[in-house]
Length: 385
Figure 1 (cartoon, rainbow, N blue to C red):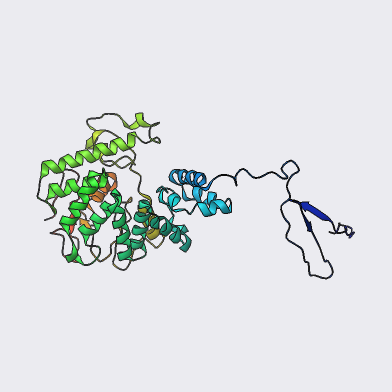
Figure 2 (figure 1 turned 90 degrees about the vertical axis):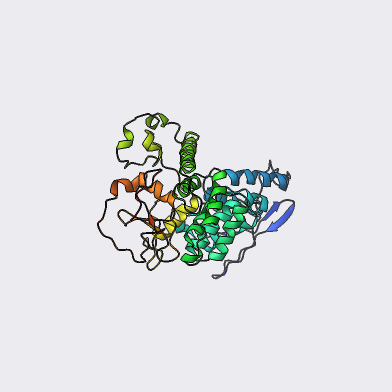
């Protein structure tokens, strides 16, 4: 080693772990050759073993499983894997990946890469139903791999994953896997009923509107209204159980019998606002946020002649032209399902919808199932003529 004045120290020996390691330096010319230096231990820890290395792998895997299931974002889990080689190896254990929460798998569209794809694939292969659903939605709608995406969502649906059941129901209602003739309304109602049985709010709304309209099932207005009321009750219960809204609960949990006569243009809950409750809008699933951000970065157009669902919390695109239903009043907005239409009507579109004397329908399906009533909230239905 040289000092600032050019004086060279002589070669010195270092004793580490009872082994002699000699450092050599050849400073003649530009070539520098040195041996790899081993980490030196403090005198008080010399000769003592590391307690972390003595921990059994089962205990470390259990701790990592708890971490992956409670992580608030992907970085919380990834940063732990980058801590050391042992964490990096045990963090990819099937038990750890199978318990990863939806928030730890919430990859952003702008950060999508092949490594993120492989990570979701590892979690899906480990049996994580959230990873199966998220990766299935991404492959089906974003990567245009319908077969693989539908199979992953079906794998999650077999494990009674409610969002996957509802997404498959939407696919059956719209015939997204093929042409318009591939719609299977009875299969969509069956999948929607299973998701509603598991407490999925959008599935409850969709099933309620199907029963009221006789869409894919025998018409039963009273039963359909019961499902809509149950969806409202579950939505209210979800907000009450949320810790984030507990502080401001007094601001919205007030009764005003005349509040339902005004238009709701704020960020309150679209359906419960009719009953005087200014409940925050439900949080969208990470997969839906990924779809919305993915197509927003591409100009909001999924393809030539294709449209996105007008409900901001959905993000589903059309897989073929004129797949979604239009509003029968203004003809401007379109929705992938009746549940998205009911949510967007009370949340945003009710104040903006205005009757138009004449608007073009390219495929001529405004008189049938291709049109959605502009005010199809519960029993306030305007049927297109």
